[in-house]
Image (cartoon, rainbow, N blue to C red):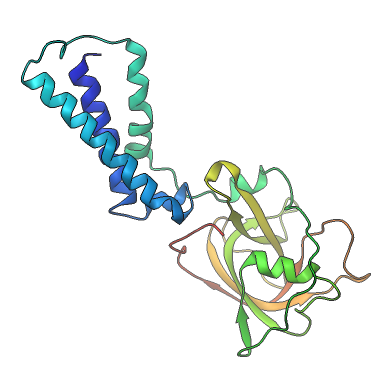
Amino acid sequence: MSRQTQGAVLLILGATVLSISAFSTTYVNYVKPGFRPLLVGAGAVLAVLGLLSVVAGLVDRPGAHQRGPRVAWLLAVPVFAIVLIAPPALGAFAARHGDGPPALVRTGGYSALTGGEVMELTLGEFIGRAYARPGPSLAGRKVRLIGFAVPAEDGRSWYLTRMRIRCCAADALALEVAVQGAAAPAEDSWVAVTGTWVPWRDGVPDDYVVPALAATAVTAVERPAEPYE
């Protein structure tokens, strides 16, 4: 790989990073929104360095055509992966093959839900409220949750799911709520489920058990601009 070719690869890589971060929201499929300035900066630096290298080759500066190791072509792999494949946000497959349930953190309790007849909550808050001490604040309240559908192993029940990430898709963890009383939508389809929390028969368990929601309505929705919690 010549220096000019290396510069072209860097230029394409930088332009690709800029295109998914500065000019679109594709980057949220891979990292949290707060990383956007860093991605834009990194893309700009790579693009400038690549452009300078290409220009140096065009003007035939000394060493511009010096060849580097062929393994440098591996730099092009992420470029073509993003441009040609454009992996989507994590979905049902990742949820099934995750590292297990979220860590169970006992809290001092949530404040009572206020507002209209139906409260929209994130899956994380719904799960947290279900396990909160001294008692769940969900009792008797109708809530609305948004996530994607993941069929259960028994083929009959299903989970409303949302992936949670700390920094990027590599550390994603599935947040799940078992949906009762409604037929399962197509796998990976995004839906809004309205219903009420189903209390555990013996009270809040000591070990983690997926909370359940008795559904009164399931509505198809567009995938959120930010797919992760």
